[in-house]
Image 1 (tube, rainbow, N blue to C red):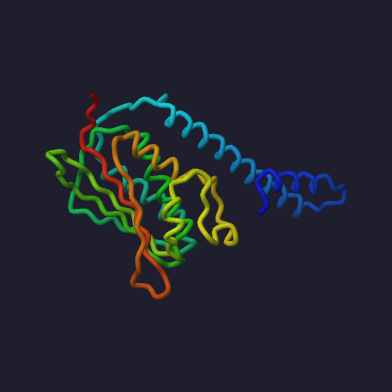
Image 2: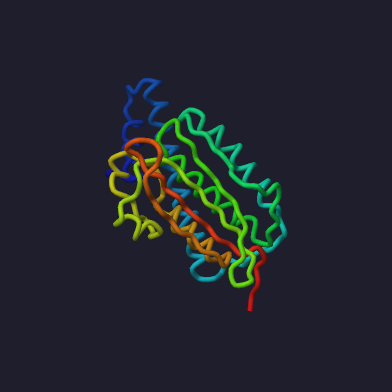
Length: 225
């Protein structure tokens, strides 16, 4: 496995060649930029996790409408996914859904899950977001489920899917880029919002594929002791 730092070192070494043509020079500069950005992303994710795990990050509560946030993110990802042939469907009978929460944390959770779905979805499939309300023990809750169609997750990987730097079987071979911290960050952020996150996998309607679903449950109104 070539790490980002190794790739950066190799690119720098190649750029030092005196007879390197412009096309190859541009290629190695692009590799250098991509790997540098990946290292920056890794450091930022580590800092975010450290703040969350040490309770240094304070909730900035505000009343927001969840549905426009989801639709805005969905629109931006549909554009990114066009080349892969992915589509995104939002299933909800709720035209609006007010929630008292930390908007930045919630936006980051959805961003990470949509990014993850885009990486691991098979081409020309549909990512589905479902949003519902429920009441558990007199507490109003919002339930969001994000599902995608791909190769599925093994029972062993399911047990460790929210661990830091965990990479599922076959991920390295398929060269799926990422810091290995995205889902660990999702779990910490959801817990930061006093919610829960679960993952499940099962057969899909497409042959030789599986449906992977992440389900987030959040209180509609935050309360603290």
